[in-house]
Image 1 (cartoon, protein in one colour):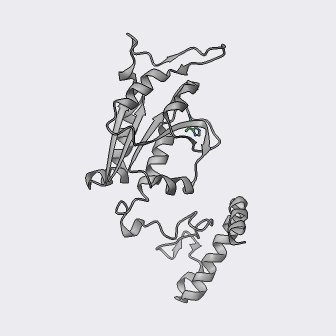
Image 2 (cartoon, helix red, strand yellow):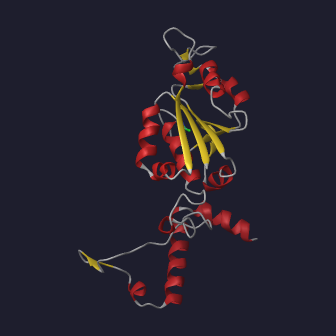
Image 3 (cartoon, helix red, strand yellow):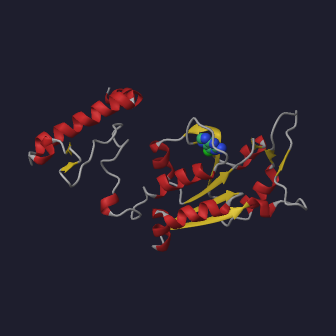
Length: 230
Ligand code: 6GU
């Protein structure tokens, strides 16, 4: 059983995604418990304000530390949970992080908006994660990426068909191309070798496709792979 608490100003974004995805099924099966908290509810301001202008001046608003810390402290077991801040200035996220995060039975994901968080939030969290080099308006989509990628690695969450062996990044190679019926669609044929039933030739063709794709699209992964093999 994994527990994930999400702190956000847009709880419905998280709830809808969880309900409609594999996470929802995991939850029904008792393998996952997602709890969503709106930290606006923890503002002590009479207008429930959670942000203010930056010290030193500049554009935009900064999320205040107090409502977030009060929300954190309201979560049962928060002292032992692994707390992650979603921010574009965090460490770039990859499959290795997803694997590492499966060691924690309780995760707390904190989503920001506006210009960012008051830096003093660092004293209350364990790490900062970014999901890539592009700008989102808020951390919600990022929190969902982290949650989905971690939870699906937990045993029993996926069924056999969805299994995590032999998938992209398992060996620092992209996946080979897949085909199913019909054999010809609008003149586009399934590659000959896949119809031969020659298992060794198929294995070699797929490996070749993986290497070719990775070389073309993700040369950085090949460099990483070669370093591991040395
Ligand atoms: Cl975690 N948050 C926001 N706002 N933008 C991002 C991101 C996170 N990761 C990449 N871009």
